[in-house]
Image 1 (cartoon, helix red, strand yellow):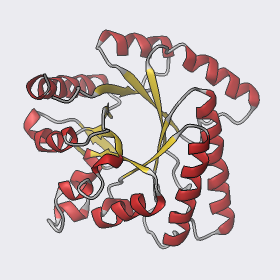
Image 2 (cartoon, one colour):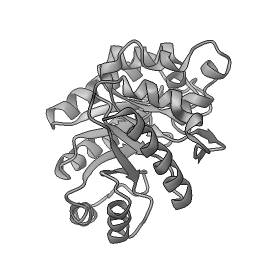
Image 3 (cartoon, rainbow, N blue to C red):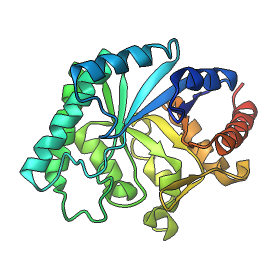
Length: 263
């Protein structure tokens, strides 16, 4: 049987000694550190402070997640596209200094329309960013969102295949995407064309009004976890909840699944 995945929490506790203690107490095997534009260090001093702070989380594995709203590599505005490229290259350099190896990003986060995005610019810019990251020893993963191009399995696979980047599968986003709710596609269609490209997953039941909802029982997410289990490189399962009770509930449910399906 395949080795079980690592179960990971987010950096949802501000105090890092408390975050590390929580993660160790509950047996998490890593932390996915989310940056926003507001929390991204903007000076050498702030960067050095962040590097020193994250070093205190050792020996836990840390991967990185960019929750950058309205920051798109494929923006139709050349100025905004170039600014997005600058920001993402800055993140790559920072993550390299932090010893990180994987960064998850989005296309269309914070937008309510794809009219401000260029498909060709998005593919070309993703490809260039992936190459830049690779030169630093980093893999860029594209995450599927609840709406937009990446919410549609047929476009999500093209974004990944044509740009050459890797992927992160968000179970809650996929669950509420129109393509799935309308039964035009099955959940498995998100992963079927390129199962080897997925390096991680975000696990919770569904997203409602930008809030992540925990599964109430294993039956809520069982079939989706079955699909994750078939992905050969998807060994990083982030329980993407930021409230302790719902996080620990999801941890228990996911652990029960692993106990029954990995040995």
